[in-house]
Length: 174
Image (tube, rainbow, N blue to C red; front, side):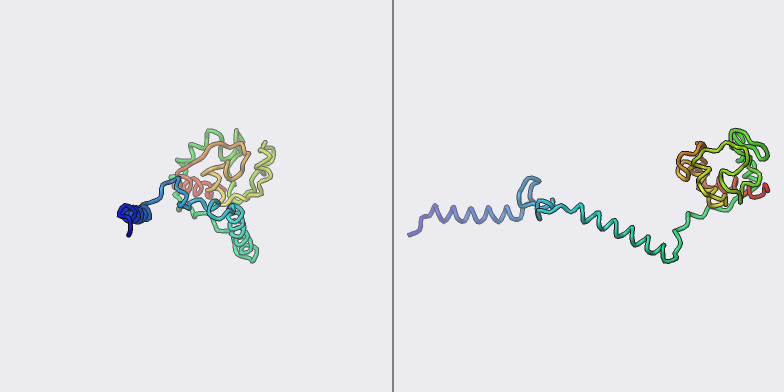
């Protein structure tokens, strides 16, 4: 004959196991396998590093095959007349025809960076190998330290339209 307490206990245990199986596991429950290293015994960091290196290598291979590096965002078209007004901010350190704290700007478009004779450029700018065109001037004015780390210029012009207007003005100043 079966013991009524045993069958009730077994039924209760089965019912409790079913309830536990449907309940979400707590963070310290060993059945929870969110940590892959704990689940597999392996660290995944080398695989993540390998995947990142493969992505970088793929980009390098594409560029080596003759593709160009993605261009910078095209600046908006500028208004030279408005640029003459915005350029007044630059005149704290620059002028069109005379070197001051910064070099003169007349003829800057098409000029190699760090090449005005007699002006004391930072070594970073002298070795930058940049020719000033509208795209490089836009990047320079947006954040000179990002374009040429170690340069002495600290002023940035965050507004894209202001930069475009100043560049349009400088293009006219040949």
